Length: 76
Image (cartoon, rainbow, N blue to C red; front, side, top):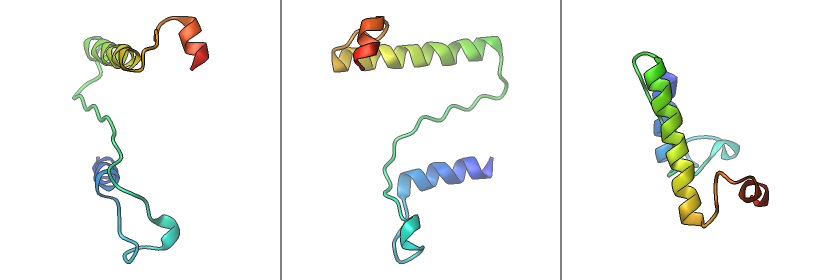
């Protein structure tokens, strides 16, 4: 669990050039989605699938594409 939390913090805050080697420097402010559940159940898995489906639908509306139409996907 500790590496997971560290990676989340590193993605948010980044690191400074003075602190590490130049080839290991990266910008912070990288948005991510983290979903934690106590147990993977059919209900939780269904919620996860529904969440991603809603995300794709919403992005399609924002970008003015039909997300679930093959022609829209192929134009990508």
